[in-house]
Image (cartoon, rainbow, N blue to C red; front, top):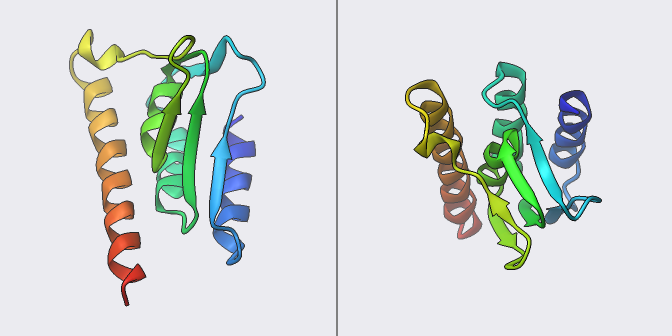
Length: 121
């Protein structure tokens, strides 16, 4: 999955005509789940957060671990009120997981600021 998303991030960065990317799940019960904090995974999230196209997470189902990190790396997040659950494991754990989430959120904020700042130029 990481290799496929890394390849997708390259395609998103390379297409100047692409304005918006929507990430959805084929399974209505699970958006994305898996172990969080892997260096290769965080590199993919940083690329998605910095991509010139607006990234939208359309969340139906659970987003645990890596899914939560992915949702926070996207520029916009839309959740299905009835079925979405973005698990905040950082609220229950101490240390590294909370730091990873903070870095991903900070990267997304910087990317959004750059996009807004340079859009006016």
